[in-house]
Image (cartoon, rainbow, N blue to C red; front, side):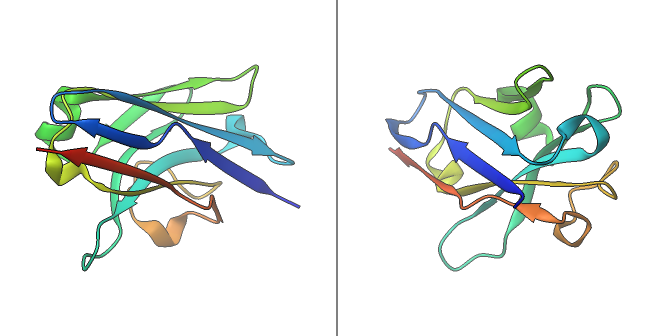
Length: 124
């Protein structure tokens, strides 16, 4: 019944931008943390950014923090990830995830609901 649907992925050149969106059905983002994760070929899934506690945000590292912004639209039950200055190393399948235990964490096991993923490809 719970559905998380990602959109906004695509192929861009290095330095370009994409805006990912995650919309939830049958669950409210307002009561849980929401995160974006990514998985590149041959690599483990890693947390990118999360939003929680009324809009507080967490980013995995300084490179992501400098270029990406996570935000939420409560009325639309949607979370966005604005990705600017994209680099080839950002190429991955990006997943949206949410969970009531997900506070101040980018650890996948604390997220209960997951989307199907959207492909982001950045060419050099």
